[in-house]
Image (cartoon, rainbow, N blue to C red; front, side, top):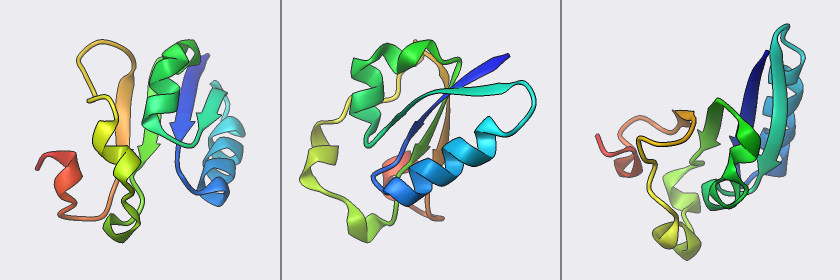
Length: 90
């Protein structure tokens, strides 16, 4: 069973990802939060994978500036972002 944590500022995106991924055989959504920082603070709920929705660049808020960096420790991370979003580091 793969355990997944989800972060998105949008309640609709969070709910959709949780329902869609949770309906897949072999996947359990263990935590859904508004921000990556909240997942990090909760140790990702023990998840092996974190799905992070960055949202539109125009939706960036100041709270994002202090968010912890995605590190080599912790779960594997899937980032959902617009093409060319500078927050992804590419």
